[in-house]
Image (cartoon, rainbow, N blue to C red; front, top):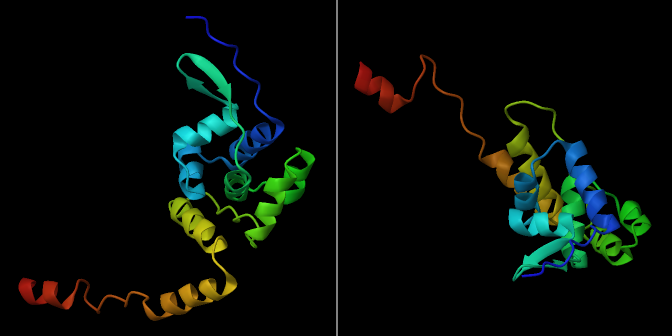
Length: 155
């Protein structure tokens, strides 16, 4: 079987790949935050997919590219400069700046995921989430450690 040559990745794909590396995030994590499978993320970033032994060029839909850009911190201006005005407009419609990156540490992945989810919500939805979180904070454990049930069983 004669394979076709691999297409070069488009400029926007190289932009996303560079931002992913700069963000020090795995493609799997970024794909999940953007609502994509990691296989689809890789196809878009590489610029091709393999179909029956041939390489077929891949161009991300504007909304998909905008979500990818948001996750890794690519701006709408950078998308415009890469020739993707459509994705830049979609990114601006998302209405939120790219999610800020958390400092490294044991809580960074969950905070990044929550930040990305919150960024995708409307301001009203964000306020409602914050309001609900304020009412559901876990109570401090009672003095003496453990729960009431655990202390009764132990003593």
